[in-house]
Structures are given as structure tokens and as C-alpha cells.
Length: 151
Image (cartoon, rainbow, N blue to C red; front, side, top):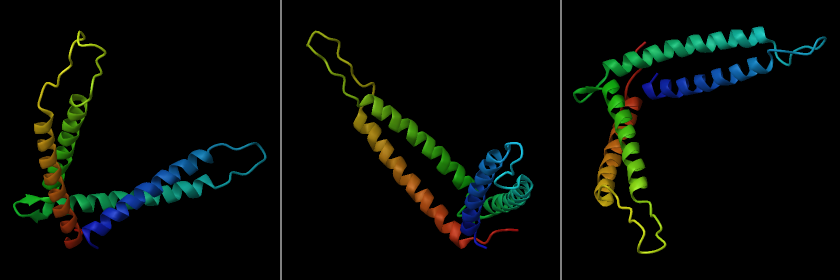
């Protein structure tokens, strides 16, 4: 199995577990003399099997990410870089949005509100980060489809 396939399966299992949680909650109580719509014992058995499969899969994904080199960095390192770059980019975008917001003045006597930094230079930094993020993501996606899952 390729790493990308394992990642897809992991996402599917996470959705399935969430669905089972909702179904268990919906069948936690019933009216006296009635039967639940679904048997909670069967739902718990299915949940336990899905969680066990997810745990094994996540361990294998983590082993694979830690052991696979792309250039001189592991997939885990690249994922961390991508995640942190995304957080940094979001912070810069939030600043840009706040700094570029127009403040209406009703007369020339009102206090002018100015940006603390040049918005266009911040936007250039955001654009550079976006390019770097896309390149990292593309590199990771390629590696995911080329890498066999370590079991």
C-alpha cells in the first residue's frame, strides 16, 4: 500500500468513527418497551474495530513519515515545515486584512488611521509564503504516491 492510500484510508476511518459516535449517542436511550433503532453493542464492536485499525494505520504512517527522506529531510520534517508555514501565512494575512481596512472619516478634522507597515510589502511576503507552501505540498503529495507504507 502506498502512503497516499494509507492517508486516504485514515481519513475514511476518522469519518467512520465520528459517524459511529453519533449513532451511539442517538441510541443511548430509548423509551420503555421500545427497542433502540440500532444495537449499541454492535456499534461498540464496530467502533472498537475501526479504532484499532486506525491506531495501527497511524503508527505505520508515522513510521513511514519518520523513515522516508526527501532530499535531506524526512517527510515528518516537511509536514512540520508546511504546517508552521501555513500558520505564519495566516498570521500575515490577518495582519494584512487589518492593516488594509479602510477607515471612513467624515471630516478632515478627524484623526487619520494609518497602517503600521507597508501593506504591499506584507502582501509580497504572503505571496512568497504561498508559493513555498504550494511547492512543499506538491513535494509531499508526490512522495506520498511514490512511498510504500512501512508496516
